Length: 114
Length: 115
Image: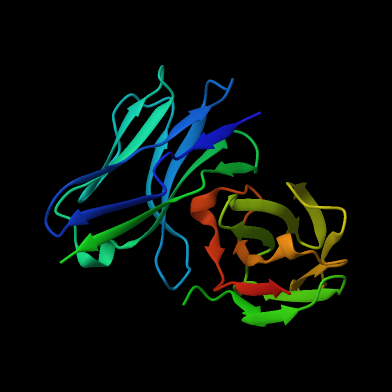
């Protein structure tokens, strides 16, 4: 079975600062996808960044980057130059390479303070 | 606006009752997914339909059922409701049956409150 753990229910960061959200997972799979999703107050789920486990290079998307440590089964999200619009719930998610079921963490509520 | 619509937006009911949540996928999308989001369990995948047929089943209780109709809209039926069923229920749709999260477009959700 796959499990995803986000150990930080709530976090806050000053505007323009950097924050890191933690995520660990457990799986026996060798190839899989990892995602970070953002859920703003509008409740929509927005893909922030995706990482393929077979890629060693950490994914980056503008101000968002990940630290993917496959051996440690760790997948943290770094948000640089935090903006007020980054305030949201962030979910870490795991999906097998083949298959259509995925697993989410319980989320981290991030607040950017002006 | 993702193009996925869900009705109703809010639903308040009592324990033991039955409710039906409705989802209309984006135009052209054949897959519909249902999710439950509660505070303590995060976002849970319930079930997926593709072109009218069940494609994948997740953590869906026996008290819950779903179907996808010929016009591709889907309904999630929740019966014998319990207090713990209070949650936000999302529907998502995609063109392919692959289930890739980044291919899915989410609706705004239905907030169910069971009193």
